[in-house]
Amino acid sequence: MKSFSKRTWFKIGTIGIAFMCVLMCGLMYISFRPDTLKMFHFFKVFGLLDYLEELQHNPARVPSWILYNLPDGAWLFAYSILIACFWNFKIKDCWMFVLVMPFICIPHEFLQGLGIMHGTYDPSDVLAYLLAIMAGFTYIYIVHSLAFKDVDRVERRRKSTTKLVLTSLCFALFVLLAIGSDDTVGRISAGTGEVNAVEELWK
Image (cartoon, rainbow, N blue to C red; front, side, top):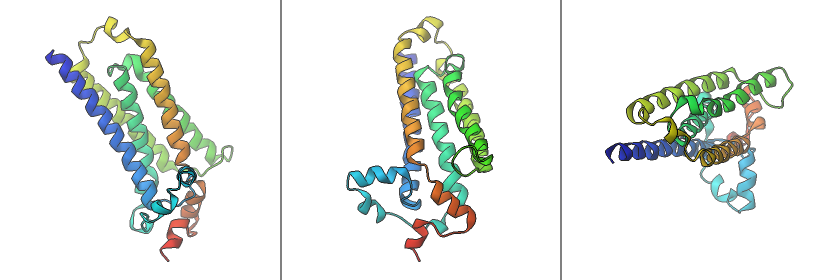
């Protein structure tokens, strides 16, 4: 019973950490990023855009790596630990599902640099992804060592269909979050010295 309770608390804590990472990203986007983000179109449909615009601040106060690169890393870190949580933090069971996201994101960045994909290449994004996935696997290894090392193969495979469904839903959710946070116009403006939409409000 003690072991089960310990595992449960680790899972609850992991879900909480992932939620806080996503929440932090969302608040940063709402507070400092321009309304060219696709998520603002969603807010507009529900009549929230005018209210959210009142929460925006001058992005010049925040370093660009915090505005653009940190959310990318936090997003990928949250995804990796959440996927591992579904699979009892067993790296042998979840590594493929964890790595599928960076295997999409990192090549996408390089394709942007080559002009094949739409968007702006940023090497700092690649670094943020690499650091996030390293931090994610480190977290998974530590939690596994502390609470899930004695989970046997039978228990790991139990309800695998449910785990696959949760994994698929989580992947789809984080892809939607990535699409919603797309801000090509704002990032091009930041890279060329042009004034973006939020900065214009503070002139």
